[in-house]
Length: 473
Image 1 (cartoon, rainbow, N blue to C red):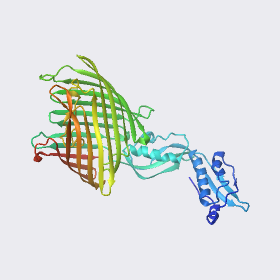
Image 2 (image 1 turned 60 degrees about the horizontal axis):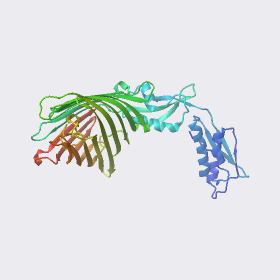
Image 3 (image 1 turned 90 degrees about the horizontal axis):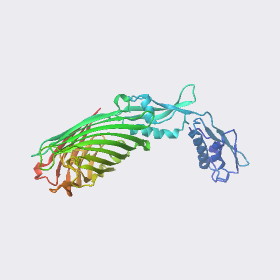
């Protein structure tokens, strides 16, 4: 904490020229590391700016070592040109944790783990900003006022005191689409965040697209014992009239860059079966074991109507498949990147996402395909379609609105996807979707409406109408 820097500075402020400082004298005993920045004043111009900079540096060195009551002042300037300085390190403090004086439901132990402030280390105020970013990056809370430092009575320890209130980070989401001449499609997703203030998350959902059905569930354990590593368990069922697939996986996740980046690694096992071409019954089951690596980065927690946002995600998976015809290997790569920028009242968003499978040949069956349509994905296609093992999609979007009320906009999504040939091999075909959208933000509610067409829309009156409602609590 930098205090008043002494009466000599007022005297220096009135000096028009800046002669060099002949010598410096420290009037009180002080640690050598606190005095060292002041040695640079010898021979420097005699000005308020130069002296204040050196005194500030001396105090900052003390604060970084936990001496929060350190003082440095320019006391006097004598006729011989000697600058007399007063330096006091004071009492040393250590961190004693983090305390919330607000209304957050985060448990004290959970807040301590999120903050990563270790008890007993030097109380450096400069580390408070990183701690603050880590807590807010969780997406569970927001700040009601600035963080402060408070001494724990009758100790040499201090706490970082934060004023937090809960964000509506849990949600129930419903989405659906309808187009003339096609079946209605839909999805339901439930996400329970920070369950009972424990930083544990649970998500589960189901989606229906044409003849396809997908169900999934995810549990996140925020820490494994004393390690700052999260464990994520995931289960998924994906099936239609030609294939069915069950996957169970477990990932370990490290939080980096003050909570804005994540690194993941894990293993998965999958069982799948398909209906062979020309047959009506499911064939032999294929068993797969795979290992994977992934990572993501975001500039801030996601917003319903972002005005400035960067995010990226990648995943790499290598698997060994065992079937009645022998063993084969497969590699899967996925990537996604988005950038949103405000340009006056408008927000421009560009991005890309894609997935690739290697080798992409006739051994890649229908169970490898993924549905990429839906209101949050390739919006020109209904939820759960089309299904393909490999695709690349670009996104261009412009909207006019505000983060408080939402807005309207238009989008264009060109891309390419793999399509099965009669000889069971795959070839790339071009595709695109385009349309308009509206987002309405209400207290705890978000409503999205999309009207879109795609390159294979037979007639304009068969455009796809999609709606999404999300309730945050």
